[in-house]
Length: 103
Image (tube, rainbow, N blue to C red; front, side, top):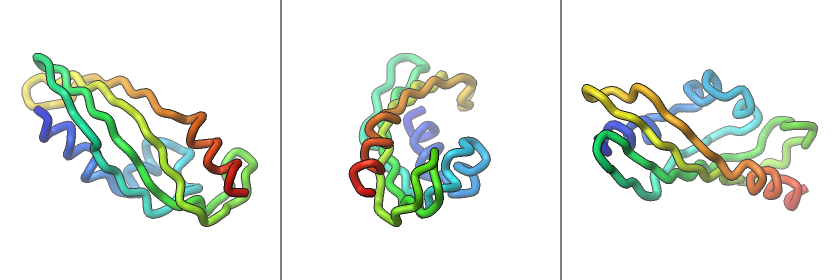
């Protein structure tokens, strides 16, 4: 089950990110790293980190070209080798603070 959840992040491509979250077209070359995972029953908890470059306007912040990081934790419910439900939290405030510092 850990492998299934890990592949979800490591196989992530820019086009997949663009489709799932409208904010990411302002960032390029995002790379996802799964920092740690824990499993209990059919629940997999993954702590992940995304690194990319701020190359487009984002919430009124002009592109800086600087590298930024978004960290988060996702809880996946896995049944029959499929992720059937998930919940994520992200350090969006920290993400915004990085861009404000690099202006």
